[in-house]
Length: 121
Image 1 (cartoon, helix red, strand yellow):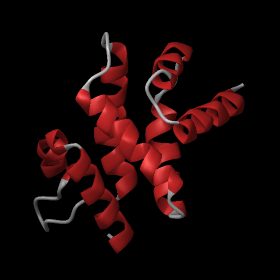
Image 2 (cartoon, helix red, strand yellow):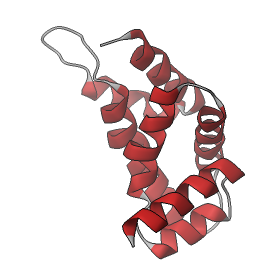
Image 3 (cartoon, helix red, strand yellow):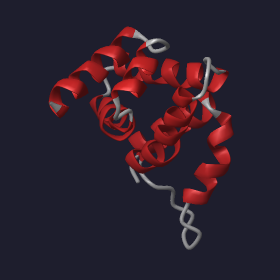
Image 4 (cartoon, rainbow, N blue to C red):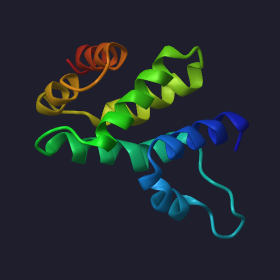
């Protein structure tokens, strides 16, 4: 795995320490290698966002997750932006989830969700 994934995965675990257990389960026990960011973000963050968006009221983890995503989308790291859009935001796949996400996310995440809505049509 390349250094981009290592750094991006580390950012996720720093922002959402509750995902560390799930991350440990993704590490290959035979050689200790961790998977790339698309897998980590898609398998850990995307389901967390869906679950949290379906709950009533905002939570600390939802706020931390959207803050991280907004931060990544403001960066010039195209790989990280691709991970967010393809592996995370693609999982917000219903009009209700999009509506709820827009109530708590920042402007860049909201714009990316709008791009996905247009693509889905």
